[in-house]
Length: 299
Image 1 (cartoon, rainbow, N blue to C red):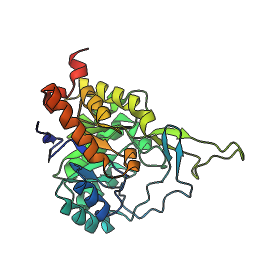
Image 2: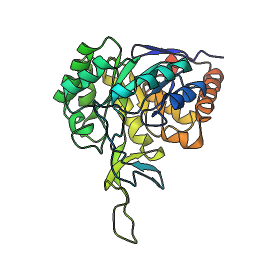
Image 3: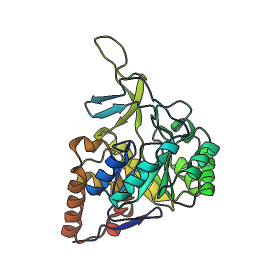
């Protein structure tokens, strides 16, 4: 069988299928279980400098084409999450800490105080005031935050980009200038749902982020654009549900991929994607390196 091991963004991964941030990443036990189910790496829930309760409910709703969520970045603070990361490491795969802040200094503070195998900078959450995409839509701020965390930490830095922008490539280039080891594309699309019986927005925060299969074409295009110009790896996320989706994302230029909403089907989705990808590569007599960016080479 073809090897699925890959070196991406400063990390050695046994396979290119990772657990995405915000999904089953709230405890060390759930992160460890994802690793044991086959994930090549796991990303924690986003962690900030102080505890946050998040938005009032409802915070998540299923729509025809995926999920809408407006969690509001609930977390116990990075200071109270270190033990969970140590538990997650028992799964035997890299543990990437997703972190957020309202300034470059706050991001750097968290990076100095938290031990993880890498950091994923959440500069793309669409539904938390003063955080996420409110910083991440400005290239100069993306570069500044990335540079500050790079200077504060010795581990790889990944930057998660927002699709809620006119030019995601501009953001990717800014992250690269700041010293990022990889970019992650994409976070959720800003969206909304309304209860037609009452006329009220369904989510407690009114709007949230759309994830799931509906956003996959946006993610594929974003990965394609970024990988064609960046010198650092692109990690693809958004709507990946099957091994065919993973193949498409890797063909677009993703060096590895993350899975989130598809875990509604259960932890078995990791094995399904990994097995299908492996069989595909064997049938095509290809390697992951052959597959990565194939669409760009053929355009």
